[in-house]
Amino acid sequence: MSSRSRVAVVTESNKGIGFAIVRDLCKKFSGDVILTSRNPTLGQEAVKKLNPLFHQLDITDPQSIRTLRGFLKERYGGVDVLINNAGMAFKIADTTPSPIQAEVTMQTNFFGTRAVSAELLPLIKPQGRVVNVSSMMSVLSLKKCSPELQQIFRSDTITEEELVGLMKKFVEDAKNGVHQKEGWPNTAYGVSKIGVTVLSRIHARQLNEQRKADNILLNACCPGWVRTDMAGPKAPKSVKEGVETPVYLALLPPGVTEPHGQFVSEKKVEKG
Ligand code: NDP
Image 1 (cartoon, rainbow, N blue to C red):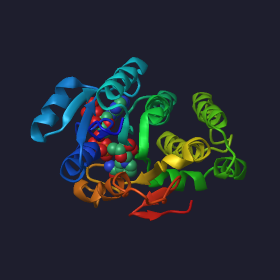
Image 2 (spheres, helix red, strand yellow; image 1 turned 60 degrees about the horizontal axis):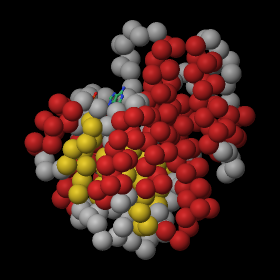
Image 3 (spheres, rainbow, N blue to C red; image 1 turned 180 degrees about the vertical axis):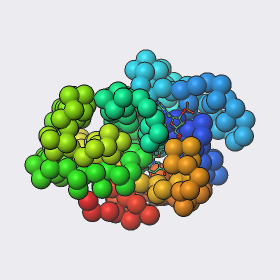
């Protein structure tokens, strides 16, 4: 396994922060960097601008994730760096009914990230690094949850099944128009990112329990408010600045033991 090339994978990286992470890793990571995109045409166009490898990946399509998994296993015997960057947000002006927005946002940001993790975490090699791109919105949205929900999300013993149940409940509550009455904040994006942040803590705990000696470090992070198609031109950070924290976490040197299971912003652990 260790004799093969090292490999870093960035989900949905044909543009925005993901593309800039690939660009940075092409310079700084010693090994192959794989740019992925759900749309092969957009992916191939992005690849022409850099020099990474390309693989199709749609994080909402289980077969697409399994195909990538098979490729990584066969060609590299595992994964050294995984950056779960893929994510989406509806624009404020979007007229899609809010129950559908809740469902689509949750399916992509939380369930898509979870599906990729389920397939690729078992492939992470010793000293591997996993970065889940969450958002400061997860911290802000958590503070707006009911005290009961906050307690559950902050618990050190919350299980993945409990978290999945709560993310599904949010979507159901949103569909029934009762999410705020049920203690949720009025933001599907924020709740989906709470899911990503808490999932990261759970996965880090599982790594401690099952593969402690492998010293894999897994963290969630916020890139900051970055000028991309998602955040728009008024955001204060350039994409170059936005990738600093994710790339820092992806390249934590061998032997380092922290951060792990944390939410990191501006390269510092943030206590939610
Ligand atoms: P962009 O919108 O610029 O890029 C998002 C990427 O995700 C694109 O490759 C896009 O592919 C893909 N994508 C978009 N919608 C979907 C979908 N429905 N299903 C699957 N893939 C999709 O976003 P950013 O670069 O700004 O965001 C990257 C990550 O950073 C996200 O997780 C975001 O939540 C997070 N983030 C961003 C912040 C910011 O200020 N920009 C702040 C905090 C967090 P395609 O080209 O095919 O649409």
